[in-house]
Image 1: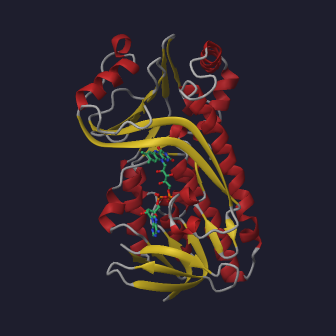
Image 2: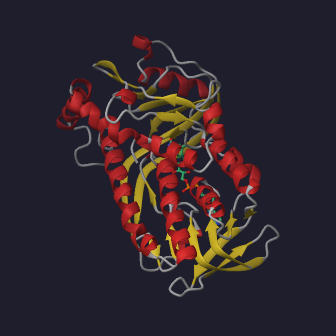
Image 3: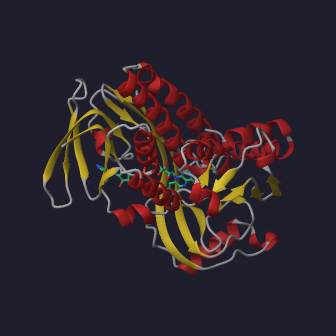
Length: 392
Ligand code: FAD
């Protein structure tokens, strides 16, 4: 089988790319390892940056987002020294997030893609990409019936995440890894939000976070000891710990509910360099995974998909390869900015990890308090924070 562009993965990157290619009349196909229902129900990100909304709006993909998403522009820091709010929507460049769960966005993108006549094969796992140095790359995949199938293309877009076939097929790439040494227990609770802001709590016992999703479901994060299983604690113990770290005695208890999902996330990030290998291009988590502290992953994925779509359309319709040649450098500039900011956020919210040489250091603790104090008191620091927090 063949297509001009074979897209691996039906996450935000792959489906934005697929929609933009179809809109320009480019022949493409998406191969996705998971089932259609799994793709449409997998809860992950929820905070979409202004640039993401601009891209979706510009291509008629934002109907669900505008109907059911909510603008959001405040975060609250809770620390042993007190709490403060940053209305980041009126700081910096004045950008806000839209809160819209990723699984709803993916469902919308899929609906538009199918309505535009897009081809997609679910439960089809790409195994390896070959011959990317030539003009006719090909790949092997295992289809829903377990058969090995072969696809040829002009270009292959690797939007299949950190553990996908695109990354595995690279022979000459450098992968820069950085482990922040911190693990989060990510929770999805059947409970309304407990505050009308993103909550970042700093506590001697570790970080806790609160992020709205829908009026009925809220995401919480709890800094967690690496190596301890996600189900090691009862629901009651988790809520008690969240209350403690969110400083509930001072600011009121959290709205509790059934914990629907628990997952462990090591704050380990990476960047692949370069993002182009002949006719294979990486986008989204396949290209780079930032630490989750500042909601960057899905937003970078959509931005890279737009840059790649424009470059592929120029190459396939006009023989103009300049966009493809510039793709890697353009995306990497955004990626490293996001990595730097999420690294800064990570150091703001966590003490050095237990195995770090300066673990438990009073000097480091004082630096962290000073960092927070600067953010609380300096308008210039707040503007810098706001610009980076919503920017991609
Ligand atoms: P994915 O969404 O991972 O999609 C990749 C797709 O490829 C998947 O559907 C997968 O099944 C498929 N696939 C994998 N391997 C293969 C294969 N071999 N063959 C075919 N298909 C394959 N980001 C934000 O911007 N804001 C947030 O608030 C935020 N919160 C998050 C919370 C959590 C708990 C997590 C886990 C992540 C969060 N992120 C957030 C990150 C964000 O979800 C990801 O960065 C985003 O999903 C990346 O999109 P993608 O399309 O690159 O990859």
